[in-house]
Amino acid sequence: MHQEACKRGINGNALFQDCYTGKTWNGGEAYDYEHIYGSEWVHSAYKHLLTDEEIALVVNCPENVAVTSRSINQSKGKTSPEVWFANPRNIENHGIDLKLAQENIKKAKAGIEKKVKELSR
Image (spheres, one colour):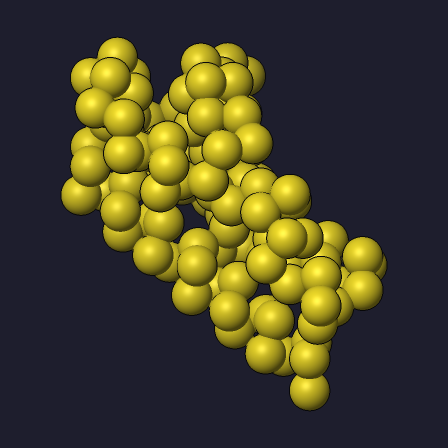
């Protein structure tokens, strides 16, 4: 993820797009790497199929890891995206681009499901 962001940036500086707002983040700014679906959610959903090590691989699949502001990441915490985005205040307070956020949530869920299928064969 970081290598790709460096390719997009200038002079080796990473350049990211916030997965929820669309804001551009440059390397060194106060952004966080975000698990769109957190480890607790993935563990609860797939503990009957996967080991803890496999769950860690699922949580960290590329589709589930993105960049967002520290304030959004801390506000969302361990809450699932469906629950967090159902609160209109979160959308208003953080300048969420709902269409972009929903696209990234859908992509994360598809990536998780793909990785689970791959590991549970």
